[in-house]
Length: 386
Image 1 (cartoon, helix red, strand yellow):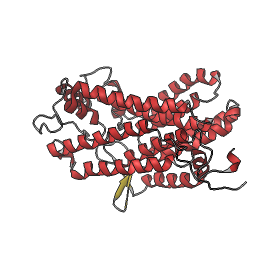
Image 2 (cartoon, one colour):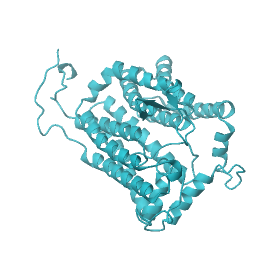
Image 3 (spheres, helix red, strand yellow):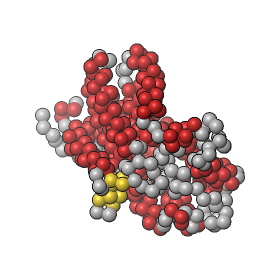
Image 4 (cartoon, helix red, strand yellow):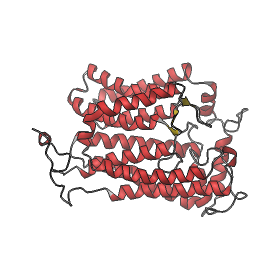
């Protein structure tokens, strides 16, 4: 049967306004925080100027439009055009290994490209592509997934993006992809035998990475967590400054415009260590408030995964859940010095146009599963879907 077009009833497309409001609230606070950093002058040493908070505002605005646009597209149709967005994503990622690729100041990986004067991080786009393609793969093969060959193919699918970002030197993003893969598999009909074997497999991978791939610098970042204050190269100084900034905010913080002399400078304060600025600006109360909003976002995505109309929608939501949960846990843990510094941004709060847009795009996918859980007719309706 062919595709038909029918008018969408006004009460049929229900947008998850609570989720969209929460992420937009974080994006708005992010713009204020970066504006505070720029105007105070505490990050002049890194060349962070007006363009950073302006980019954040523009990215947030475009992000809302992107999320709403994606939410109107039936996610079941979107996954079927994987043959369009996957090649584009792979080309963008491949460019990071050419002369167009570069290592951003303060980062450990060559994961950025600059095209026509615009900088972007292709791995952020690849997260979206992976959530869609792996959800589609898993939903089509779930009944046979516990057969060894089928499981092997699923794992190969999952290891491709993990391997690519690891080759870039971005081990933090590799962990995020592994978490997305893990949460999606756990939400499927995977056999308990594989679940029992998983910890041993993970331990083996960690051992191989430790002895064969991680540099002494990366190892020291991990070991210093167990032996603070014993680092001769002062690798932990960034985290120490971050903790000092959080403590300096006290209960209610110093406010957004306390001035350069009042704020503590922390490298990458506008980006990966934005939570340190949350602490000194808004204090303990504000920091807890931000954590509550982030927890709401993560838990709302999980709740939406329970009411989708099919398994494909559930897998998309669980992939998004794994993405945001891991980013929040690792970033805040990194600033609080309970996790190593691995360059993971805090969703909707850390500076960065690519990250902001990609996060909003993932939210758009979640809202699409929410909106289409009971939709029968829309502009992308196909009679074969009923």
